Length: 341
Length: 288
Image (cartoon, rainbow over all chains, first blue to last red):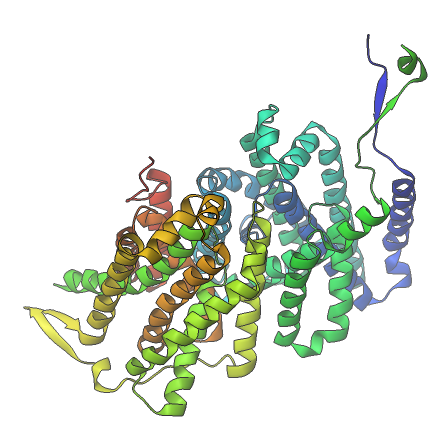
């Protein structure tokens, strides 16, 4: 019998979710019309964190590669942008994908070394790599050494003549980038690799015994994540217009926040980092005055979530109500004739 | 002669790194836990030493007697109350919880003690030194630190392989459920291992407080030094961590001599080099 069935990804909640995403995208794309300069800046920052957290979630939540050193690629992306625009005269917007490509190439030998470290030790190994990158960056006198460098005004004005236009342009690039990152993750998870990844997430040994090439899949995810993370990093520092080794390779900004966002929102689910980022920014807007106490509280909340609801807020809701915002499930739907034979 | 002095400096500082590493290797060996807050707990020990010497007015070296039991108690409590709940087949919970703990300790220290760097004064011993040979000088305090490190690691090795305490650790390390069937309470064994680990790094924390300036942010770098020493040395024996610490210390000292900016970089590169050539470390665990 030739099986006549097809795999369905969508459910009713995911159709509502996709419609909501589409509506949200239209509203957000029009933000320059309804929002002020501060709104655009805040939204751009939110997009960056959604993208960074989604990429980290893919790495840690699906591929089981718990890295605490993704700031290596944020910083590398930022520095590549500054290097290629200042030293080689590349257009800033072209420098963003270029930074991603360089990071992907760098990630290959790094993965070769880091994959020798099992499980927990991999985490600290990635941190060493980030430190090595930071120390190398502070030795680069052409890029300001330890004190950093600003993007020359001529490069900034080359993007767009007026300041307002420039801000709109960067906002749209940030929005486009987060949409591309999210779409790429959704497509990846719906592909064969996605099935392999979900299997690895649920049980690595079982995945291996079913013929999944676990090491190769992990390598692909590691390199893709480096690619995306470096592009986000390049854009972040294009918006900041200034880079220094300590800000570019900051473990608090690019790893601690990202991990807390993902854990609180729900690790191992695409929706988790989005929900987590919203919570993170709501908390930050209300508690930012507390300074280091805010970070302390965030750490405590993340520990509590990890112990009490390890799948995070979205994981809890999804299990309780069967929700999914994005069409990622796989359900077999048999055709009528197949069922009778 | 200059280079001899530099290598000796590196070897002596290596003892300190070996203590960081021994604490890490111990808990990894017993319960497969990598404690990301390890470095911040070392810094916490340094601040406890600071508070002890400030309130009691004693010599910082004497403060070890007070800091070690406090840190051991912290370790036991931490393991029983928090970390035992994270252990299992899944890698994520212990990593993320200790990562959260690291952020909490750093920021709590920042709130309590500000970001100013601090230092303990141990008196004349700080600058005392004696000549070993023509042009080769050894500082008394670095030497003391190294001797203490060797003693601590020797004691750990003895405890691990020659006492009932160590037998319980090794049994749990080999097979947790069988150890439990034999009447060991794993939760208690794990908590004892963590207490021992923090007792070791308490000694290291007091030496850091005397020998260098410290502030709440230096923890992660200490974690990384300890980790690198563990990987360089291999997981075969406690002496491996000493070898790893010494190699790291010498690499940093030589790097710093070539260019002050290369001190840390040289240490990291030595680690990556060993990882590339001998991923199981110099003294690997014998597979049986």
